[in-house]
Amino acid sequence: MQAQLFNLKAKSIAIIVLLLTFFLAPPQTNAQTLNGDEIIGKWYNAEQNQVILVYKKGNEYVGKMLWCHDQKHIDDANNPDPALQSRNIVGANILQAFIFQDGSWVEGNWYRHENGETYPCKMWIENNKLKVHQYYYAAWLGLGSTTVFEPLPENHVANR
Image (cartoon, rainbow, N blue to C red; front, side, top):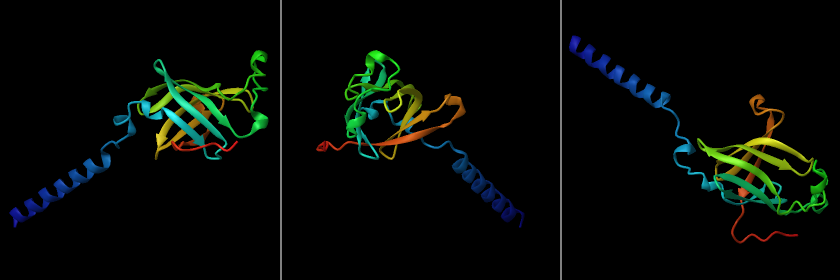
């Protein structure tokens, strides 16, 4: 009887240890499989009215506007620098100075030509989509919004 009780306790302990190992193990993250360059390429937003090109410049990742459907916002009239207000936003770097760290791209900025503001932000890839979270005020407050971009198909032709 005591041997059966001992076996039951041993099995119970083994099951508990197995369950704890399963539930308390750290989740697998992209940080273990990404090298940083996965972000390089052409991406379009959910509204399909902007295409950006993300590329590597030195050790940083930057992005430029390749195409913008809304022609009335094609200029940079809201730029705080008067010398840049007449420039065409297409071809301008709008994502600046990102570094790859722990599975995401951080410490970068997103220049929004719509209002002439530059926001601190971070980017990550989730379900093959590029997510860009811009912070309002300060990043430590966590307030902001996320824009989702999808990879631009190789054979995509923008309708102008």
